[in-house]
Amino acid sequence: MEKSALQIARAAYQPKLPKALQGPVVACEGAATQSVGDQDKIRELFPNTYGLPVIEFVPGEAKQFEPINVGVILSGGQAPGGHNVISGLFDGVKSINPASKLYGFILGPGGLVDHKYMELTSDIIDEYRNTGGFDIIGSGRTKLEKVDQFEKGIEILRELGIKALVIIGGDDSNTNACVLAEYYAAKNYGVQVIGCPKTIDGDLKNEQIETSFGFDTACKTYSELIGNIQRDCNSARKYWHFIKLMGRSASHIALECALQTQPNVCLVSEEVEQKEMSLDDVVNYIANIVAARAADGNNFGTVLIPEGLIEFIPAIKKLIRELNEVLTDPATGEPREFANAEEQIAFVKGSIAADNLAVLESLPEDVARQLCLDRDPHGNVQVSLIETEKLLSRMVAKRLAAMKAEGKYVGKFSTQHHFFGYEGRCAAPSNYDADYCYSLGYNASRLIANGKTGYMSIVKNTTAPAAEWVAGGVPITMMMNIERRNGADKPVIRKALVELDGAPFKYFAAHREDWARRTAYVYPGPIQYFGPAEVCDQCTKTLKLEQA
Image 1 (tube, rainbow, N blue to C red):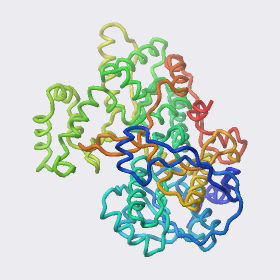
Image 2: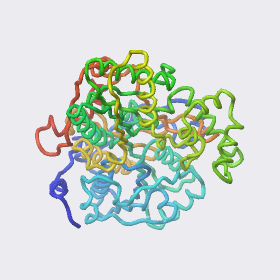
Image 3: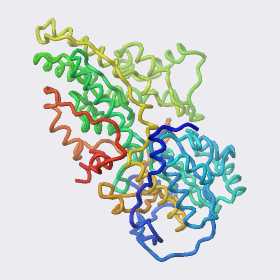
């Protein structure tokens, strides 16, 4: 296989490990835990894996271990560093006993159910160290939540002699890992299940999980692109660039990219919801900044928009919630079937409340149609398909025309549109993500060696040098609560939204007015892998501000 010069150089990079994982370890257990919400219900649903202690690994005495076979699954969307999690897991499993084996299930959780797998050998692993993507075994979005799936899974696990399964995924995937761990524990099947926190969206974090892997690399990749656009923007001085960024459920990516590049406008969905802003309020906010810059002779700028913004506008959020309910068949929990699009739209309009119908009919026809029709595999509105960046620029143009007629705007308004998503999901991991992911995988092997199940691998103190990082495990049940999904109450890991009283947002809020009026752009440039630590080994600005 042909390789670039960078691929060849990166293959030689040895990720750094926390000092505590560089030799034998012992697990120090804390106090019993409880879930973040709905404690009685979560305890009832997970009697065998609830209330477990948080674990921290510290250096211990060497022990002899029997060989152990481990399975690994990549679940959900890609995130930079996934290959290094598997590399760390492989090296960790082999360090337990060189005769141990690692099996990868092909194309996600579906590979476990369909018995599609491959043994991951050193020759294979070495081809993927420090590379982006999930192509070593592929990923998938099959949800592990049904008994027949669990039973099909145990068949192949027994056939291969697998005693532990590591699921690398986001909040939904790790919720599935928790359900699977509980089922196998209740059945005494003797299979451990460990999760690893993955998502570029950054919404899988809490007091125990500082950040999800891939967030660092993705934000640096997007920030490079935004910086390039801003350099062009400041050179041509004739376009407003509306840039949509991934992050349906939270605005962590948009906020981090704003901290790195200092755009003229960055919308934060959580603030829009808290302030109960309407779509018109958002449009007026942007239009007023455009007008203020035009008054200074600057008919150009950048606007960062979170992918899920429209779902946080209170009136539209209420509409979407009812759409998800009425388009779900209460008897099966599956999406309703319709003969054609017009039948579905008519059903929606005849089923939703009058106030929600009024909101639906107030939206541009193409947006309203998308809300009524496009659903994801779980039956929810596909917000990512709504071209929010074009919707907002179109509405801002209309508002500016009205302001010009009123004598309140004197500039020119020309736009360009961008959506950065796939560009960041499979980038070669930054040094931070390469080290963090390798440590997460290696640490998962230590959770397995210590007989743990229903845990997520965690590595903390990551603003310090890697040798000082703290490794351990957190019970997945500790992060769970009950939420309404597809017309039913389900146990899920609580998503972490941008905290408006948190240090990252406060820093942004303190500077955004200056960034709006002035041209204060920062140009981060491409990710650097070789050179001084202050250039190559830095974590996100979000993490620095959070950890102070």
